[in-house]
Image 1 (spheres, rainbow, N blue to C red):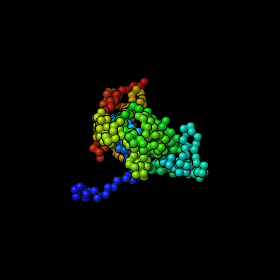
Image 2 (spheres, rainbow, N blue to C red):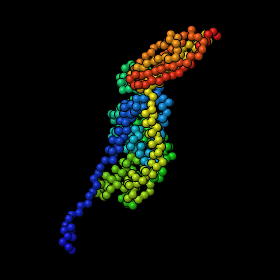
Image 3 (cartoon, one colour):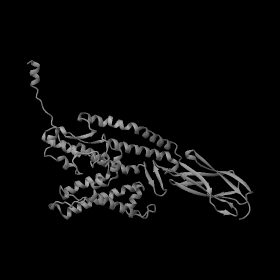
Image 4 (spheres, helix red, strand yellow):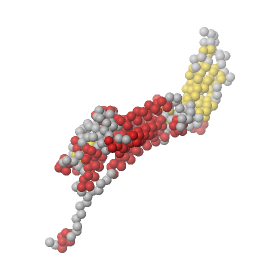
Length: 439
C-alpha cells in the first residue's frame, strides 16, 4: 500500500445523521397566516373592494363600471388561468397551505388535543364524541369555546373590510352610530360569526373531506402528473409496525397509499414526521416526499420544479398574458369622469322643458367640475348650478330647464363638463324640440 493510501486510511469517516427539523411545518404555518393577512391587506390597500353605497366594484381606487369591461375581464382571465394551473400542477396545495378554513381547523385541533386529550374528537362525522376523562372539565371547555369565539369574531370582520373603511369598522365594533353603516349589519355579522364558530368548533376538517367545492373542481384539472405525496416502496421494510405518518395526518389518511383523488391536502406534515423519526433513530431520511407522476425518486425533485410546471404553462401562459394586457390597457384608458344628459319627462303643454345633467366622479378623491351650456340663446334656459363639487366618488344630477318661450324649431346644443386640475373635458349633445300648443 502506498504512503498516500495509508494517509487517506487514517482520515476518520463520519456518517452525517440528519437532525429533526420543523422547517417545512413552520414554512407552511407562516404562509397560512400570511394568506389571512393578505385577505385584509387587499381591501385596505385599495387593490379590490366593494362600495355598497354606490353599488360598484373598486379596483385601485377606481369605480369599475360595465364600460370598464377590459379591467374586469382581464382580471377574471388571469384568475381563472391561475386557478386551473394551480389545480393541474400543485393539486390540493391550496388546501394545505393557503385555505383559511383549514388553517383555523388545524389551530383549533391543536388546542383541542391540549385541552381535551391527544385523541379528542369533536367532529360531526357520525362517530361518538371522544374526550379524555381526566381532561373533561368545565374550565377546558370554556377555554376552547372562548378561543373559537374570539377567532370567529375576528374572521367575521374580514368580509367587512371589503365593504367599509377601517374607521367605519371601528364604529361598528364599538357600537357607535354611523349613517353610512347598513342598519342590518349587526344581524349579518352575527350570522357570519355563528357560521364560522360552528365550523371551527365542530365541523373543521369534515368540510375538507366531504363538503369543499374545491374537490369537485379538482376532478376537472387533476392528473397523474399533479403534485402528490410519494412513498419509497423500496424501503418498505423500514415501515413495518410503524404508522407514525398516519398519526401525524390531521385528516386521518395513510400517506403511503394516496390515490389520484383523495382527501390529502399536500400539507407535508407526514414528510416532516417520517423524516424526524428516522433522524432520531439515525437511520436515513423520510420515505415520503413531494413528487409528480410515477417517476423514479432521483428525477422527482427536478421534474416538480421544471418540466412538470413548464409543460402545463404552455397552453395557459398566452391567456395569462392576454389577461394582463387587457387589465393594464383598461387602467391606462380608464375614464375618470362621466357626463350624460337626458329628459326629465316633465311635460309643459306639449313640450319637454326639464332635463337632468348626470355627472359622475369615479375616483375616490374630492373634485370640482364645471358645467356649461353651448348652442342655446342667452336667457332661454336656466341651470341649477355651473359648478359641481364631489367630496368623493359618486354621481350627481343637476337640473336644467329650457324656457317655453323659445320659437318653434329644433335646437341642438352641447352640455360641456370640465375639470381644470386634470385637464379633462367632455361634451354631450342634446336635441330639443320647441313647439307651441297644449295637449
